Length: 226
Image 1 (cartoon, rainbow, N blue to C red):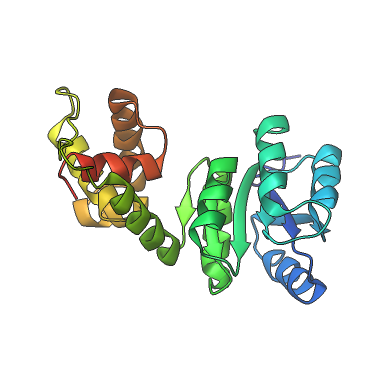
Image 2: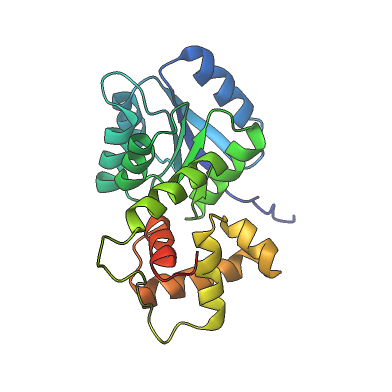
């Protein structure tokens, strides 16, 4: 008798939103994807933490404005207590405080509720693979904020030097990050794979001591690349 070969593991996802009219249809739609299994639907951060503790969970699709425990504090606790669980924010809010608060708490993705089903499933898959996905509106907002913060004070040097051992390709990737491109956008611009882009970014971040993508935008601007 031939052995059956198991298919790829499905991503176990929690959908968190305090509005049942949003939470339940979203959970049903995501559950249609072959590689996603919605294991719980939560109405607040407390329910999210309980569901994660019951596990296993790969990704939490997180609203920000929820009772009991909001999305940012819930994300912070997950990052500290369950770092293996990725958080993708899905919210109506795209202000600086919400974006920087969520990303600073450890969220790997940030989408607004204008995102379509394909955008949401793509972000969940990326988060499950350890990658980050930001809504275009969010990228633009981060870029604008970074440009403002990167503006030199009177008398301060306008350019921030980068390590001499960066390769031309790594500088090119940093330039495109500074322009707000996603990994996919960089791959398409340079005619390389997303995996290769991720390798260049990892090397770049290590060499230049860059913390995250927002920091990379600031460094690109400070170095005069964007």
